[in-house]
Image (cartoon, rainbow, N blue to C red; front, side, top):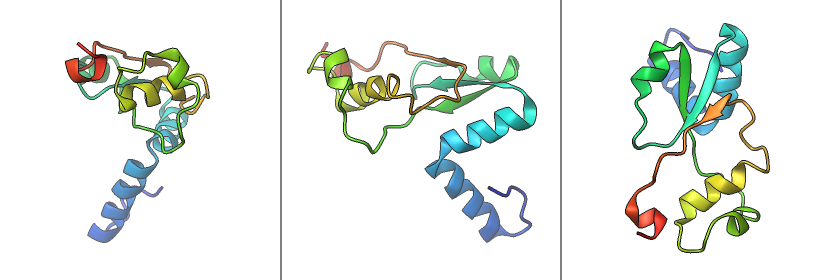
Length: 112
């Protein structure tokens, strides 16, 4: 995952790789800096606080794997995105994060 390749195409390729594999980038950043990583949801999390603390906030993304455990951890009225994230935790798909932020999600996701 080269950063600073000197060309616009190389920079865009590096960004595309980070977007496709955020866990790999977070692991590389953590190894390089010795810092901590926090997995966040896209809403209601003040990223500035994480940056001020020297922590890398990384958006938790939906896995492409089918849900197996998530269906049993949350009620069916929760949206697929929320169930997928719940499914990812016990499967250890995201092991780089030191912590995760789980704020109240959008009303359409929580059935309210």
